[in-house]
Image (cartoon, rainbow, N blue to C red; front, side, top):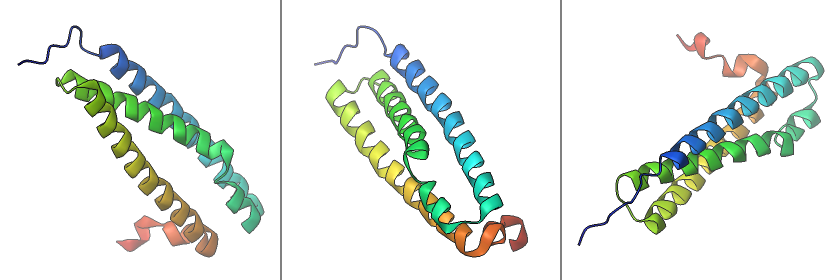
Length: 124
């Protein structure tokens, strides 16, 4: 028994990549703007507000785009739709939660030690 895919899901791959890239650009711009505003004020309350809706919305957009891209890629390799959706959703949720927790830890470290706390060039 062969699994026949009438047409590969190229549209799903392209849309997922487009959504992920545009949301990633919005996420980067929002994060850069918020951190620059924080560096002028140095308020701990403001740094806690960075993780709110304005930053979470582009992050969720990136996650949805990555999920669609993964799903389309898995379906292109002849996996059934239910399996590819299940794998892509679980991978996206797992990796997205890891990235969000790492971002949260990085912002806490930035709050405690300023920009010198995350200066990677000083390690050499």
